[in-house]
Image (cartoon, rainbow, N blue to C red; front, side, top):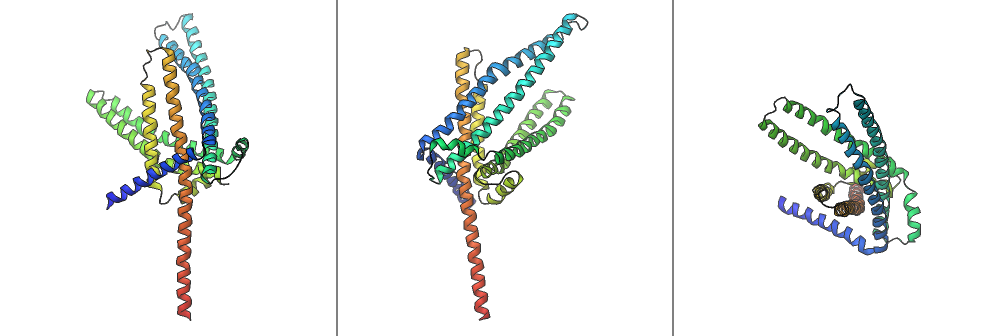
Length: 323
């Protein structure tokens, strides 16, 4: 019985994916536009990271590695130390810029893809030139929700770090090969638990972002409403998160496995293609959550109607008995 139930859930997940795919075919011009423009912005961020952040990290590591080989009493040591501090300040400044720009582009991407998916799903008529103004006029609510989600995500990562650090400290005191192998197994198991748990909480995070964009609800209220309307859809959305998470993780691993010994043009092109693929996976995930949002609203409406029917039947029975 449980097997058939799980197969039905998988069929529903495939149906959501298929419905999301149809949205791209339903309004190709709009969906292609909202996918390409944020994609170009993400490519610019990738170039900034590749040509600015990565060389700064390389220089910082190189300068830091030369410090132990220099006499601490020599003027060369002081000059090299000052260069390390200067490189570090420059790296921190550019990292702040990189994080801020990436967050703005990410929020903008979520706004336009959810709005486009919702308009396409509801078959609403509008002009393409009016779409940017339509999407950007409701940015304050999603920004607040995005801030809360970022805090929850950071807190979740900090909790993982707090749990992992004692394991590292305990194992380094007994530095045998067996203990190191056991530590690797424990860290891997903890990482899997962390990823699965984050996939579960991402149900509420992603759905609350859709609610913040399509409704006048944001922040904790959007998170609470997501927890309220997601009943009956948790397993499906959890499996969707695992699917997209594994897909993005696989693409990220391919990006890390690029042979840096190749020519710079080959490395740049391959990395750019993979970044585009990871972004496309994330955007398609948002489309599926928009479809899931309307399904959750539909299920909630059916529950309300069934509750009204029960109340009506109870009232009719009471009236009959009184008569």
